[in-house]
Length: 491
Ligand SMILES: NC(=O)c1ccc[n+]([C@@H]2O[C@H](COP(=O)([O-])OP(=O)(O)OC[C@H]3O[C@@H](n4cnc5c(N)ncnc54)[C@H](OP(=O)(O)O)[C@@H]3O)[C@@H](O)[C@H]2O)c1
Image (cartoon, rainbow, N blue to C red; front, side):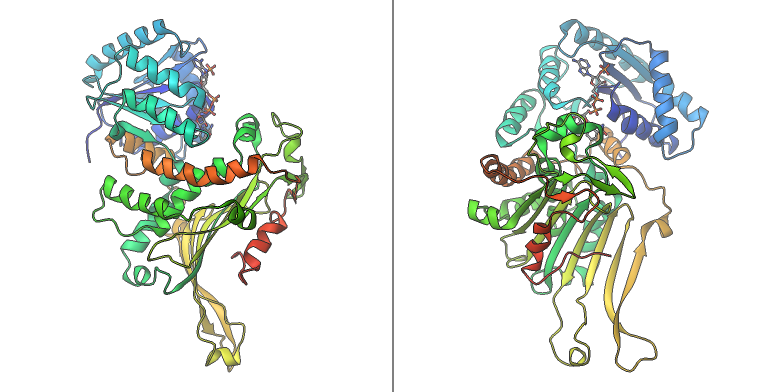
């Protein structure tokens, strides 16, 4: 393992992400003795407060959100390494002070000028912060500086390109860490292991044996306090452009030549390049959008999307997307990938379903016309695990065949307290491993795919809302798959 020797500078140190994810992740890493001696944190935000006030706030967050029980001795270790500085992101004076402070910390922690700038801020601040870091000679190509950028990376291909140009003026590609927190999830990292460490699985992983692939990311929650951002993004840009297409690349990629960062990213990119071209006619027939109406979740009445906080009352932003796509390469030719993601549905679940082809309609099929196809399900959240469904004889009966499962329950074997995505991603960025972060060309091709849909939608009217909160989603999403004589897999 490479040694950590760097100062982590969190822009947006007083924000929600820092409180709920970053500080609890730092605490969890310290609890496991994964952060070594040459390490300190400097948090930057607008609100004026002392170091003591700041760290007291973070202590409360750690108590609330950390996965390990609070331990005063671990917290003290963290506390002595934390400094809080307040200034407006546009203030040159602020960056000068920050630079001085960092130089002082360098000599205490022997970090030799190495920095990781974590931009835990709204996207409109990405550009100004990077420009100021460059102006004040706090970023260059020497390899000492890394930048971690939160999603969304742009709001379309054009804005993403502009943002990327600004960032690459200050940081080289290998020092840019674009976060997609899905990639930090245990079961998502397990997809490559499942495929490339199991002979029988990888042997069956192609259009020869697979009938279709389904990727679902469904939530029961609405937009919560993110209405302002979400209303300008929608499910397509918030979920499909990043999380779902990344998940799809891991399912569809070829084996990389090596397990190093660039070899893996090269294979993921090839999948994105192989995504079918979306014509307006295809989109109209094969991409469904929805927006939730009022309804009931677990017996509690919830408002419609248009009544959510900071959402426009006549908003046409989609809270649900379902689509069918094809990966046009040798392995996947002819295999449909069905994708669905939505808020306020009747279940919380993220999973990948690999449905194998039907058996020839002879032998047992003659006795039992209901033989179901084999299915491999990768459960990502809330349950983590993998199961394989196959057909077996019902005990005692002469010819009754029923589906049964071989189930790998992740938490039953490894315990439920698996590392949080942000733990893994923070640690990797500190160690300089960018495998679980997205490279620019991956972002670029994802936006190309998504832009084709969002541009068409901009010019087309839609009758929203079209599904009730607490339902399975819009009926068009059911029809999308039913008309191919298939069904969304459900446990
Ligand atoms: N929250 C999450 O769970 C979550 C999850 C995934 C991705 N993200 C992404 O993470 C980023 C941050 O989200 P967030 O929810 O943490 O946002 P947030 O709660 O609004 O926090 C923003 C932070 O930026 C500071 N800030 C804003 N304008 C400033 C300025 N002009 N000068 C100095 N400081 C300024 C605020 O400081 P003050 O409070 O001192 O004013 C605050 O600390 C966003 O890109 C978001 O999309 C967030």
